[in-house]
Image (cartoon, rainbow, N blue to C red; front, side, top):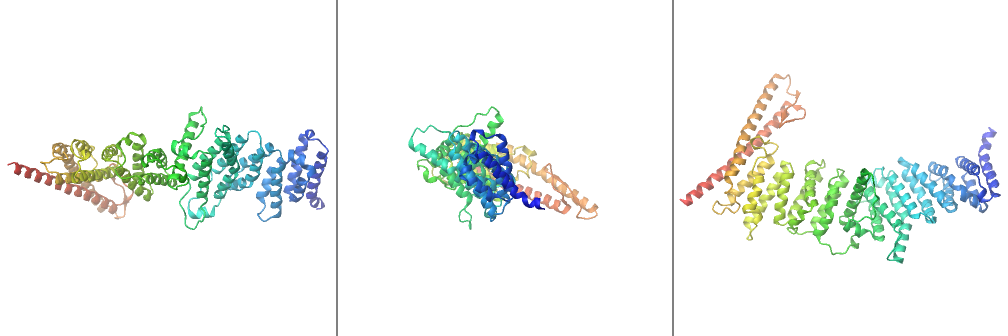
Length: 606
């Protein structure tokens, strides 16, 4: 028992003994054994709760040289103890004072490596706590470094961001307020950590317009690019009611400020210049670098043009069409992502750029740029495949906005492209409705629109008034497209007299009948016969089954329907028949109108 009571004082005595031994030695005479004994004794003091005594030893002026050389060895046990003690514990306060003293007294190079090692070893829920604990001493040490400062600052920022990146980004209002892992607080602490180095770059740039020491500037630029990708690309950045200062909005403001201060904001946003890129011999690494850079630049454009961070820095000389052109590659990057936070940023950026433009102001030549063709195709995929309903609806509205911004030839070209590439009956039906609207404008306006009348329209109608696979076309799957095509044909027959033939529909009537109307008749007869047979078969099976709730399956349009009761399957089959009846009624009306018009024309001629 006495031995246990004496144990803590023994730790302090051992430390005092090694200190007294080293006090009489010159700095050059310190041996490896001295370092080991100091580390073991200091660690024992910390673990046994004698931080106050250790602090006295470190603060003693006589021990300055010893601490300078050996103090960095205490970082590991010191961090462990700080994380273990509760916030209000006096021992924790003593440990924090020790950490501050070590930052002031230790050899900067050795302490720098010791601090980085602690950040490297942390993981999970303790990452943010550890980083925030070590940022101040790390900053102090880096400011003291004379050699390789830029490299050391870059290494520190990279290691911190790499350890934060695996953490989930708080997204909802509740998650942001709770900040369970401390990420919101930590990100803003890292920006404060970087500020003295930003100020150093700014000061040097102000001294000379030909500032050549680009290394520190490049490291800060890399940090900003990483911050844009994580956490800002994932973060919810809209103003949230009840949160006075949104932590990620504050972080975004700080990142934009750094980019502006180091004179990189405008080159990044307008010229997409991002400083020196590392040369990778491994093509896989090069692809990762390009993707990361694309994500970061896309997020930056969102911050500037949607959230208006730093927008006051931009000269008001760029036309809306030029800004749209600049942003199309970023919009494409964001729309290709499946995460809600990123996809919504892409839609917001696209919408923001389009709303700045007047209708019919975008020249058709813009469709010669690859991005102007790719983006609407990606947008169509969002409309048809995204599982989030409000994003699907928003993407449809944005597609219409995009269409509206083009002049007539641009609309015409875009319609042709989407009809050939969308591979979705609903989208094709939507485009055909737009074509009908443009024809209506052409026929009712005083000015003649050559793109939606005459031979140009005939070429477009060739893509519209046909069944993709003739009579074998799946009419149920293509019902949206077929109904839109029939409605368009009905409109043309009513509005365009055979004698005027402005649209050319009467010229191509025989072709329409051959490629569209006759195959549609055949297809309807085949489809109705097939579904009626299915209904009859189901009803017979139901009589034979013991219960009407028996679960069975049915194949429609080549696809197996999900498991459902016979009654449910019969409802689906009857719904399909109703669709065919609807198509058939519109088809009959169109053919009746054609017959009446032709007969009327013949009567006039006679």
